[in-house]
Length: 128
Image (cartoon, rainbow, N blue to C red):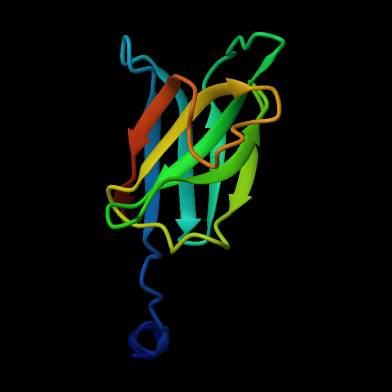
């Protein structure tokens, strides 16, 4: 009886929705990075291997939701480095949201939009 009362009085916290993205190279679909998020307001970008970037270039991290006007830069990325990125400016993370890493000139895109070739691309999948 004590066990039944103890079990029934525990509050069950529903699992928090999280998102997962595998960024693949568009040429051969080889996975290069994973994005994981347990919060709709922050993502972790995790490298799966080492990426070579020319000295005069940089990787820039982008995202775009289905209903957005255009892509939003999430900053510059150092090859092989894990980073956490707060999503404080764009709307919260959603299923099917596009993420990509483009190869830009040093300092990143000057236009506010991707200008270089896509190195890795993927879409968010909701994981419960």
